[in-house]
Amino acid sequence: MSDNDNTQDTKASEESKVLSFDKQKPTTESKAPKKQAKQKPKQKQKITIGWALGMLILILIAISFVAAPALEAFIGKRSSSSFVFGKYGKENISYAYGNHFYNQVQNYADQYKGSSTDGTQVLYQIWKGAYDSTVIYTAVNQLAKKAGIIASDEAVRRAIINSGVYDKDGKFDVETYQKASTDAKNNLETQIRSSFPYQIVVDDIGSVLSSKAEAGYVASLAEKGRSFNYVVLSPTLYPDEAAARYALEHEELFTTLDISVISLTDEELALSLSKDILLGVTTFEEAAEAHSLDSFASAGGAVGRLFYYAIENNFTNPSDAALLLSAKDGDLLGPFESQGAWTIWRVNSHATAPDYTDEATLYGIKAYIAAHESEMIEPWLDEFAEQLKAEAMETSLDEVALSHDLDLISVSSTPYNAAQSSYMADLSYTDPAGMLSQAASSSAVALTLYTSAEETLLDPIKVGSSLILVETGTDEKDEGMGSYITMFYDYLSGSQNQQDFTQALYTSENHQNDFLSTFFSVVLGQ
Image (cartoon, rainbow, N blue to C red; front, side, top):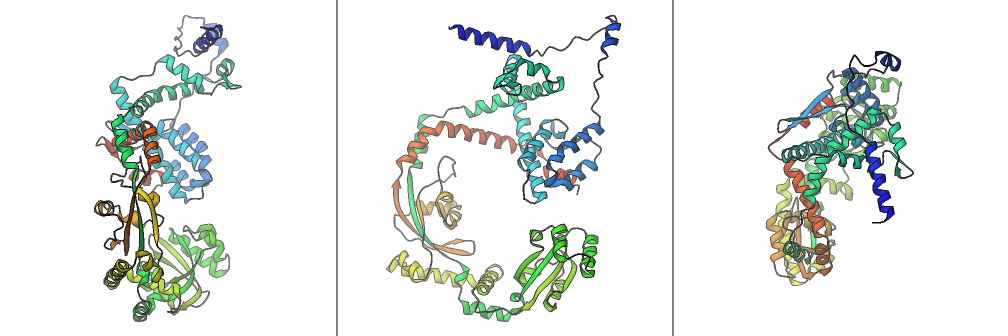
């Protein structure tokens, strides 16, 4: 061993000695009362509920730009400093100042600072992420405790030294450590000591090695792939004449209006804003930008031109929607009760009869028929698919796509990933249009795709309201993918083991999940 090694060991030992976890011995009344009077140590202030809630407000200011109203409601309406969101075994998954759940909320909130996403959605993502991680943390610690896994003082000392919190010029600095407050030292020690058992269990799960035979088998599956070509037959191919005839019989549905809207949850505010707009106190655009809760607010409430059927769906009472049909340019209507809101409408351009020569209008008509009158389109689409299949059998799928102005979608060689294994690719990675991938979510369809003979034209496959005509390609071998799986299988397997482990814990019957109801009642205050 070199002198340098001895020096490093001695230094590490000295650093560890600085970090003493021994509790201070209590003083007795007989010991130097005068000395105590001189020192006048500060009495440690108790953490009251009021203090804790006050600190919460200060700390959560950091995310007030994202969700201030909901957070203020959460802090202001409650007198308790602990809220139970669920349970794992006999242990509550509670949110309280300074605990793991609390810290996770802060961590997730930091990630969403400056987010332009809807405030309520961000709040949900922050709290749901924090809750999920706390559930796993609690479950793993219970397992660690049952197994007798603890963090030794020496391990905690080394972790504190290596944490970087007390570093100076990239190295642990004794003076920096000694200058830190007792509370700061205790908090870091508690955090590290409590996370040690969790980390040991998770690391052990991830370090379990798989057999070479297993790795070889998965690699052999990953390197075998098959390519495909297909065309999509959607309801938009329905004849224009047939769509126009249907629209003439239901002309009101396809009348178009250019509109703007303001969406609110408070009826009184909706009435007040409507009055202010009519009196000229504010403009519609200003009111929308300041108060509207929908995605059109940033554009001053402007929605654009829509079919009447799309507008009508937003109204609780169809008779209210019908008032828009007779409105003049610039008319303000409402507030009306809508789906979970109150809405104020402005008709920018009055109702106009549909133009049956317009491609966009015909597209909208066909989309409506497909959604509401599927029995009209499906028989026609089935017959059309069989016709194209017959043509493709005589020529080729390429020729059919060309003659009917259809896009021929090519899918590169993809392995048969029946179990949706994360170790290898599947059609969701290689299908540029996504329709074949969606069809293959059915195990029966996937089996047909990969067990049919090469270069075979399959029967039409239904995907949503569309059909696809698929031709299997050739089977190919990707030795590079096989080598990749073999090389990294232990790492991939370890990560998968950890995912499976945490998923099993989360879905365990030991987990009582009350997150959603508590989130709405406590965080959103509903």
